[in-house]
Length: 387
Ligand code: ADP
View 1 (tube, rainbow, N blue to C red):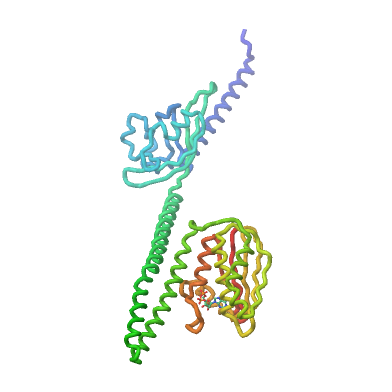
View 2 (spheres, protein in one colour; view 1 turned 45 degrees about the vertical axis):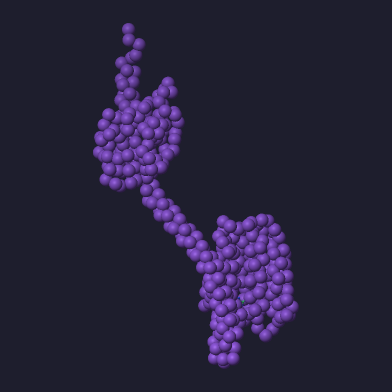
């Protein structure tokens, strides 16, 4: 006698039919996802990835039809119209993501370059994973990727322009150094022969006037060259001698160096407690010296009042050197930081390199420098130093 009643049997069949329908629907859904997703997906039919199927998005990248077996170990692999590359070299089949994931029995993430025979290059990034059967054997592998070609190109372009910029900067630095260094020698020759001429033609009024002008020109050029040399000697950020020290000490050194001028101009310099920083100490001395030196130089008829303050921000210290001097018209507030840029004639001594040096020091330390002034009531030079 049969165990199952006819009713129960019908019910079971109905249930199996329903389950079958659901499975088919699910399979169809997965198939639709596989074929219509705009991301490259590959799936092997076997554990060793000797037979790999790709979805239309991937096939389009590779330049093949969707029915082509794209496995590098397939008998027709030679005919595939592209090469998979890593670091400019063709990849070994064992190193390819699906095969590797199957061999290592775990998910792997990878970035691959696809070099097609038609010269088009793509970069993809993604993960490959093994799928296991009930006994824990790898049944097949699959991988899903993203096309990162645009990002890669942008990265490469950025890298190239950074390298070009770095090189140009190095060359400029070397040029400035060599030029200013080598120019000193002929200048010395001009100076000494002018002195000889002066002695020989001392009785001739015109000759003395001319030689005096030559000497003046030579002296001015000497100062320009000296300043340019000082600017180019600052070097790059990589050449900084960074140590931890009290920024207040650097300020004291600068004030000591300016002592004569501070007394002469009856200036008052006040300051807040400055923090400990990690920076190039001698460059910080120079920075304060140039800024405070300018405050002493660009004074009004009143005795200079100079205040060095500091504010703490999340990532930076913001240091300020404020004075009651002649101020700077807002339209010139960027220009004054350029090499040899100044707003005054010969009557005020200087070459216009001081603030260019300040900017280079601050920027080499990863900071910014700017000035705040309404052109009347003094200037407030401010710079940041990353903590
Ligand atoms: P220099 O003092 O040799 O001219 P700098 O590069 O130090 O060169 O300064 C550039 C110009 O910026 C100066 O010529 C001056 O016009 C202006 N300047 C700098 N500091 C101040 C200041 N504290 N007050 C007013 N003007 C200033």
